[in-house]
Amino acid sequence: MRGGSSTSAPPTALLQAQISTTETVRADVLGQLDSIDSKIQQKELELHALISQQQLLRDQVANMDRALEIHRRSLTPILILPADILAYLFHLVIDEYVAISMEYLSLYRLGGHRAFAFNVAAVCRKWRHFALAMPSIWARIWLDLSKLTLYEPDPHLRVNRARVWNGYLSTCLTRSGTSPLYLFLTEVQHTASDDYDTTSYRAAMSQILGAAGRWRVCRMSTSQSLCDEGSNFVSNLQLRTPLLEHFWLHYPVGIYDTVSPRPTPCRFLPFAPRLRYLCIPLTLACHTFSSMTEVKELEFCGGGPDNSADWLGAFQLLERCPALERWTVGDVYNFNENGASNMLDPPSSKYALRHLTTLHLQDIVYDVLASWSDALSFPALQQLTLDDYSNIPGVHSVLNGIAADSHVATLIVRCEESFDDLDLSRLMAHFPELREIRLKAFTLYEGDFSQLLAKDSAGRRWRVCPDLRTFAMVDTYFYNEAVVTGFLDFVRARAASASDVPPGQDAPDSRFLESVDMGNIVGNETIPLWLPEAVRGILRGDTDLHIST
Image (cartoon, rainbow, N blue to C red; front, side, top):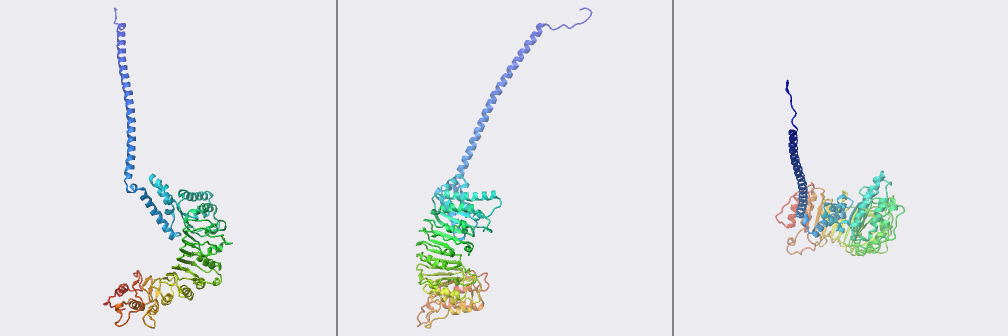
């Protein structure tokens, strides 16, 4: 145009060409994007597959780790043991608990004992299998009765506690199957008042009495719960116990004074054909007993002659134990308020304990045994143990009765208290056939040994215990230095050998002292440290031994 410049619009064809080119490029880019998306999807699928494979491999590794752990554990000594050996080991432990409880039921804590089977079952799957397959380890049952009787002000706690202990008892009785039962019942915490719960106690005792046919060992130490009128265990002992071999019942002396009226069952342990050991308080001796032909050991522990029926029943019980070999009488006192002895009249004839070889008296008032000399004889007695000897007329009266027709060869004596004159020779003189004497907590005086050196008129036999072979002392004290000289003279004279007899004289009829045991004298300042070796030298027959006291 004339007169000025002007911009002309691009031709349509050029624009169309540019659009076409751009669309082509765009389509190509979209194609590339689609290709990339496709590859991404493919990679995601591959990633998921790899992740799945990764998890699968991890699971396989975990399984192999568990398998390896099981295999490694299987190589440990305790798990490679045969089942019978493992069971034997379990029984060793549980039997040790039983042995402890047979001696010290009231002294030992019961936690480890009663939890043993449960602990074994909780170790691992294999041990649980063993435990459940061994009914005998569940048949050893320890139960603290105070857990069932102590008062608990919170009713929820009381109910839960009762549920736990009755559940423990129920589990043991169920898992023990038909195995013989070993029952150990005690009251660790004695009830201090009358305000206590008996419902859970009765529930537990109902389970125990229901299994009486399986009792083999039954030991019970209690204060009040077993003897209350509403829950009296003793009055329920009219059950058949065909497997029972050991029965021990102990409660404090005089507990029956709190029970009125005194329970009197029709028959105490009416069917116990295998019973070999029986321990009951003397206050139960008034009850009726069946013949117990297999009983070898009888013990009266606790109780006393609060009326004459106690000892009369005791003598009748002795007659029902014809095979009795060992008898212990302990914790027997006189409950009469005036202090007088309340004994029965002498029986018309003596009963001879023909198989009794061992008699043990401990913690008793000897006056209550005054009727023994008229009621009993001991023709087979070989060993006598006195756990609380004192040099008083009542003791010597009882010893005279025991020694009248017995042949005591072993005497074990413990002095409970310190007396000015225990008169050892008087004690030994009761038993002319004595071969062994063991003294515990004695105090010896010079005169004790001078009497033991006296001979008969012919000068051939010792007047006191001519056959003495063993003289033992534990925690025994010498009153003064003169006792040392007297003791040495006693050992020299009694230990003389046949070679010491002068030519032309016959050997004495007495036997010779062979053994002297003085125990541990380190803490005993009354006995010189050189004395034990000097005594051993005399017994060896050393001729060059010179001792100056």
